[in-house]
Length: 324
Ligand SMILES: Cc1cc2nc3c(=O)[nH]c(=O)nc-3n(C[C@H](O)[C@H](O)[C@H](O)COP(=O)(O)OP(=O)(O)OC[C@H]3O[C@@H](n4cnc5c(N)ncnc54)[C@H](O)[C@@H]3O)c2cc1C
Image (tube, rainbow, N blue to C red; front, side, top):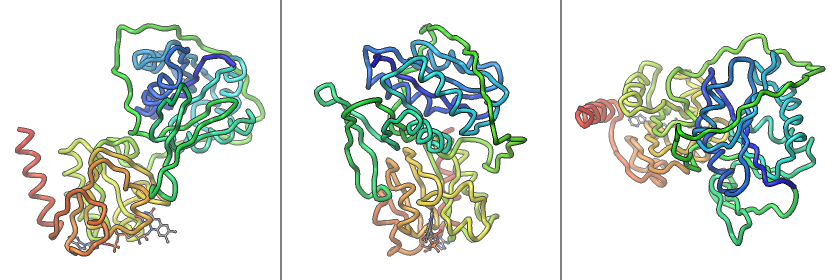
């Protein structure tokens, strides 16, 4: 086995997602003396994305350009990445635990006959051996895993392992690999994003999430305003999505997105176990609810008992004052 670690970068609308840089930091921890190789798939000019990976700590980057890599399909990306993995023969592979990462990495691991430690939130070295921490039972407990043999293949949860400092003076090789992608059975004609523009929910540092207590689509407007002044994103409980106050792409929880922002403001959300599964590992949780017995207060660091329609405008006003 080599001492190379491959980091699979992931872009959205031409920009690499932060988790790609966090994955480089994880790879560096795994192999401080080894070579960190970034890999990016796409069908546009990937030079700038490749440079970003180098600024964030990759030693070199391989770009894979093909018309079948324009939009993600597990077949296209799977074929392209397997070729690079076989050529480079790395001892480690790191990717973000995003929807693409969750779909792609088990397929790659099975083709490589390897194990996979998914959804890693922390990693440390114990006598040179990597120990991975990952949440289990919907975030109610954590387990520690080590890989005893073979490839170290992991996915990391966004927002948990800090990226290295961006350094534009770093340099490294960028190469484009010729790849042959054949026998594709899935063709993506168009991608229509339902998610709101702005900060990506799964990578946001601040999330203002609304529940059924917000009462209407109109009621979400002040939440968007608060999110905007805080530089964050809006999320929702399933209750709010089911009631059609917002799109399901905003749903956080067991059957929605799992998020770990620095600040999570739960507004009019009761705190059902399925919701907590998606946000309980947030660093600071603020709950706003008119019911002092609401379960959300059991996990909140700060609780505000009261009517959200009175509290949110006050918060917006105060944040604006601080920012002036
Ligand atoms: C298999 C399964 C999977 C699920 N997956 C998810 C999931 O991924 N995510 C998820 O969120 N849920 C999920 N659920 C649903 C979950 O069980 C709850 O039904 C849902 O989270 C409730 O949403 P809510 O807290 O917004 O609504 P409610 O439970 O109705 O709570 C509304 C809250 O708003 C407060 N409120 C009302 N008016 C105001 C006001 N003016 N000011 C302040 N507070 C106010 C109320 O006191 C109440 O606490 C799942 C359920 C199942 C069975």
